[in-house]
Image: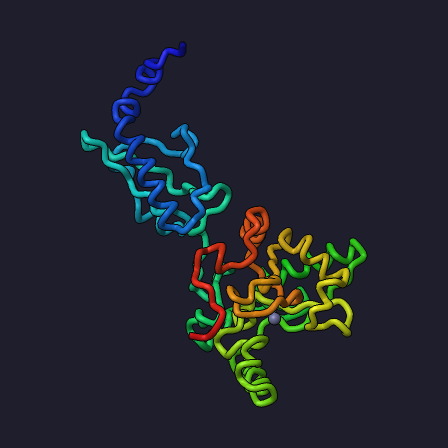
Amino acid sequence: MRDRKRPVRANPRAVRTRPSFALTALVVLAGAAAGMGVAATGVIPSDLGALGLRSGPAASADPGGAAAGGASTSVAPITAPDGETIEPLPRVSVSPGLDLDLHSLDDPASPWVVVNKSRAIDPLTWVPPELDSDGGAPMVPEASLALAAMRAAAADAGVAISVGSGYRAYGSQRSIYSEYVSRWGRARADRFSARPGHSEHQSGFAVDVFGSLGCRLKACFADEPAGEWVVAHGHEYGFIVRYPPGAEEVTGYKHEPWHLRYVGVELATEMRERGIATMEEFFSLDPAPEYG
Ligand SMILES: [Zn+2]
C-alpha cells in the first residue's frame, strides 16, 4: 500500500486544507458545468491534480485579473476553514478541450456571435471595424484569411470553391429582404432571407460559396464536390455549415449547404467532434424558428 502520508511532508499546507477544499471544489465545478449549460458529460476528474488547481496565499488571489483575461470560468477562489484562500488557476475548462467563455455570443465583433431570428445584431446597424477580401469576398480579416486558406487547400485537392456574398451591410440586407417580401410575401421570404439586423452576413463572419453556377444558392450544391468538401474539411479552417439539414426548427432556416459561418477552428472542431450541428444547441440557446 502506498504511503499516503508522504504528501504531507512534501507540502503540509496543501494537505491540511485538502478535505474541505476537495469537496468544495467539486461542488463549485459541478455548479459551473450546470450554469454554463455544458453537457456535464464533461467529466469531473477524480484526481484534483487534473483540475489544474493549486493552493496559494490570499494575497495572490486575483479574480479581477483572471476576468480581465477574458478566458476564465466562474470558479471562484475557495476559502478553507482556517481562513486560507485556495485559488484555482484562471483557466479551468469544464468542457474538455474548449473554454465556453472564450468568446462572447453577443458582441458582433466576436467570432462566436450568435445572430438568428430571435437575436438581432446589436447595434442593429453594426459595421465591422475592418474588412478585407483575401478570401474572395469582404469579411472580417480573421475569417477572410481562413477562407483563403480553405479555398487553397480545396484547390490543391482538385476542388474549386467559388465565393459569392460575404459581408453585407444593414442597408443592403434591408433592400434584399423587402424585394423578396414584395415578390413572395413575408412568410415565405422569412424562410430563406433574414430581416435586416438579423443576417449573419452583417457580422462579416458569414460567406456564401458555390461550385457550379447552376447550383449556386441551391440545395444541389450539397451534392457537388465543393459542397461535399466544405462539409468534410470546413472545420479545419474554422467554418461550419450554419444551417444544416433538418434544423429549421432550431435555426429558422432550411438547409443552406452554401452558407458558411466562420467560428474558428476550435469551436468548429468541437462541434463536429460532439456531433452538435447548430450554435443554438451547442451553447444551449433558445431555438429561433421565427421572429419574436
Ligand atoms: Zn448566406
